[in-house]
Image (cartoon, helix red, strand yellow):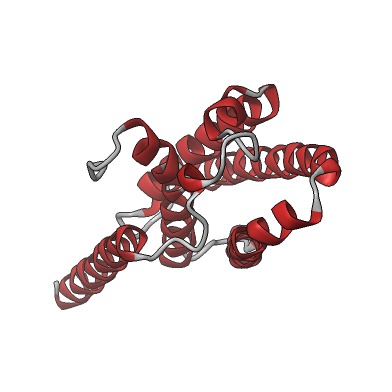
Length: 189
């Protein structure tokens, strides 16, 4: 019984740590000072509403929603400290990986089309692009660690849960700018 109590305490502490990390990360999203306010750009430079209607963006967001769904499934499967079906967990990870690869392909295609922009516009976008690259680097690290954890014959559910929670948080954070645009002045829930 004592061993079961220790496992329960450990699981509760891990869950509390993840919840705190999620809350801090979400609050940081809303507290950050944006380096590039797209709404204040002179007309004709970049129309964000038009960009969101672009086929590349819509396709990328579809993959992002799918990746978010599979990350949530993987996190839900492991949040109780065990993995009932390792093959299903690996399949969920494979789907996340597939969606991330597709998002990267679409982003590269879109950036190839942006080469036509003038140097001043590219300079304005530089802080945003640097932040996106830094976020992508961290995301890739968590994806790699999650893949490595799931390759074990008996994956550590807590490690899988931690990386899945982090990936889920970042994928959900990608929706934040869209929500802010749709509800100016209101914080999304």
